[in-house]
Image (tube, rainbow, N blue to C red; front, side, top):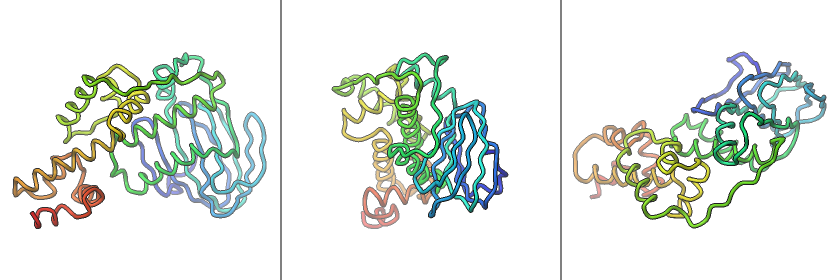
Length: 280
């Protein structure tokens, strides 16, 4: 919604997706984003009466978990009668077009989404809450992780809400040994850098969605999980073999802060980097 920035509780913009949390008193707004598709997920603890006018008019109570989808280029007027709390996810049109072309063989020039108001979609809600968790953590997670969430969300929107439906091709058997080694070598050589899902998929000439699916088939975990494991293993080596500071080791291993390394290290090993070094 076109709202004043002081009404935004928290927000973060990744490359193809913007996630914002709003909490605001009763009011009204014009909702329009020319180059972005927008999802609204209600977080309100009690239902809020909402009027929406777009290609059709809807009036009713929105409760926690209700979702609205407003396609790019569509203007909607909204009025809510009580304090509202919701998550807004804006997805770049160019990104959805790219996923449509590469993953579902949909002509991006013919891509059109169906607007929805006050619907329930457990998959969108689940992905939205994972993005919300990343938002609340101030984006300390892996870029591969948010890229993966964005791709799964895009494919779901295309399969469930596009005017022209298309089936998703099934890829079984995982990556070949040569493909897998190529990807693992790339990750190992770039542990201290930001690795995008697109970087890995491009290595093998496939869509990001299918790459993630085949990678997990091959080694049992998602690309972002593998990356975190390898960064922790590199940190262990540096903690053992050097007397470098923990913040230097964190940056060398691709973490953005001492606390980021400590959090991930504790999750995987049960102890902090400092304790690991002390008890060696």
